[in-house]
Length: 118
Image (tube, rainbow, N blue to C red; front, side, top):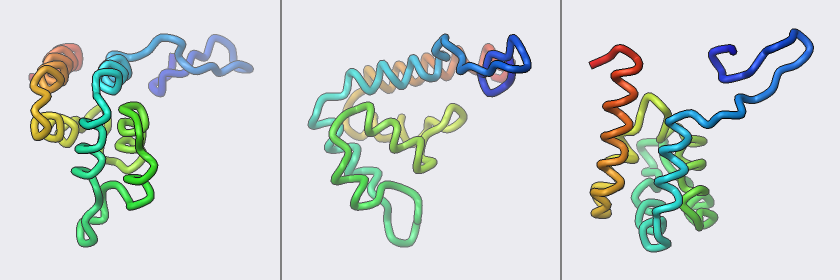
């Protein structure tokens, strides 16, 4: 298996990894637990400021309706990645979803242990 999560059992065939990674499981879990009002709060929180250039565009804000759309758009805009969960964690904290902040913290502690980090 390659570093990108592609199964390469033969040189002629490359398939996506059929097994979700812990990172994907975390994001799916969080996206499913966000209620509409939480999604609305987060999509406005991550709206791009003119001088920062990183965040959601007005079109993004208008189109995001679900937790899954929110998470995917955060990844598309570079706000969220496996190595950078800070903005997600901060946003969850600001909307008083400590239960989801705790999920992120648990993932980070397990992920750091597996990577040999501290």
